[in-house]
Length: 211
Image (cartoon, rainbow, N blue to C red):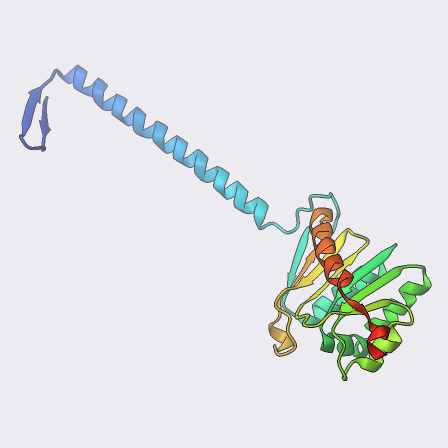
């Protein structure tokens, strides 16, 4: 058997057939080993993707999924109402100036009032405006409402365990094109709670703004 090298200068060598077959077998085995390594790496990457993008796997072992992604405001409102209604201790939320008015229109404030009657603490950070002034006065009867200028998002945390977030929310956007997230993970909820608490803490009690 003749082995030819195409490099410059060209090399020619003759080896015995049995040695040539053994050399070819070794090369094929090396290629197979490399393919096995590549396939193992690919499987690991695919498993990582499945873990990342499988919302039905809850790390806390709950029946509800770890997170939900919604782009329909009605679906989000229904999800929020369900979460808030099941609250046991406290609710911390932030919303825009117009969000206050919409909350009243869709009976969300009535739900908050029923929660307060059950002894649940409610804190709200929002922006005071001429449009929502009367709604905030009524809200303050059963919630701790604070004025924070320039809020352009919606978020809430219930009992430090469940969080809802709408990062693209702005009053100038069409509500049909907003994106909503619901997280049923304690660590995520506590992170959002910390951020919301910082926002609420720097706010001014809404009744003091009328003086």
